[in-house]
Image (cartoon, rainbow, N blue to C red; front, side):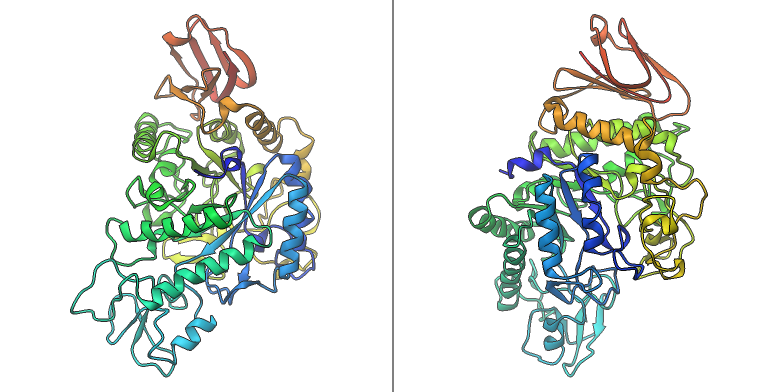
Length: 525
């Protein structure tokens, strides 16, 4: 069973380079983030998820770790992380870290040693070239397997299947794989002892190679979580995504829930902001439910509900699923031709659906994805998409660099939105009609209403525009992400007397539901 607090979590993802810079070097850091903890407390989030902040040469923005037990100097020190965790705890906020489990940087001491020692099997080495293999940079002959960039050598957790023609394949219980399993325990224990509440695991299902049904990978994580259950029973462990693994893989692996990140086809069916199904991860809002023209709405909503039901059916009706607004690898919620006007319906859904919500920093004010930025720290990982556009510095106020940093603009981690009307926290905080204040109200409503939590029942009433469903038997939710008004008669609501809780452009009377374009409504029954 997952730690009870996870079901009540509202997650806030912080990309540390881009959140807040305290020392004027143009790069975000932990003291800068700590200075804005009051904003997170005011907003109502209770869990912070940091993208990797360990020591790194930043070939892939920190997803290439050179030392798991040391905070990258650009962000501060280990003591700064402990201070942040303690300050967050005082505000009722837990902190989870991103654990890059499948590979390291070529600059990690483990790899430097392995590149010179033919007997070291912490990584996967071949005596011949092949797909994914990179020539050795050291005295050791042969080639090492990479995961993404050449600078990210894959750690050896063994192969599920051995092959006589590939003699370098090792069993999952070999010395190298076992040493790496122990290393994961040591890394997790180090940070859990310093107050961290858990981990989101990058590439969680990639560790054991040639594992088509993920059975050996599931066994690995199940064993690790069984250790956690004894040593750190309140800690949580979440995988990056279950896609394209079998729907029950999270349960079999012992994870505390699943992540439907933007790459997941369920998220893509809703928003399609660079997720599965769009060409080369390009920002694209066609063929999804939250699309202004509504051309493929019913089909996309049906696809989402089918995936959702299949996943819950395979993994259990009480399985926790984290559903994100966006993330650091794909375009933002406000992207392409999607405007802030459309975000009310999106948030009304995201904060009332039977999932654990995750808000990507800046999405609470409708920060925009910026196309055309330079390739920076590996942001271009695919010829058709540049991740830099969703990693731009946070926009706090109308001051220099939108309050992110005192550095000259040309020294910022990435350029900021140049638009004169770019959204900021300061401009929206006292505006009752802003995206920010709506998100705050919805978060506080969710956290104070058990019927809107992930474990309460969900009854779907309509599968078109408008989309209507009942949570916990007591709360009706109606969303119309389409530009055009929509209406429907719902027999189940004919004798109901819905009382408005948070409503914009939706009426319900005698079973007739009418919604303005981009309308949304939450009612008690």
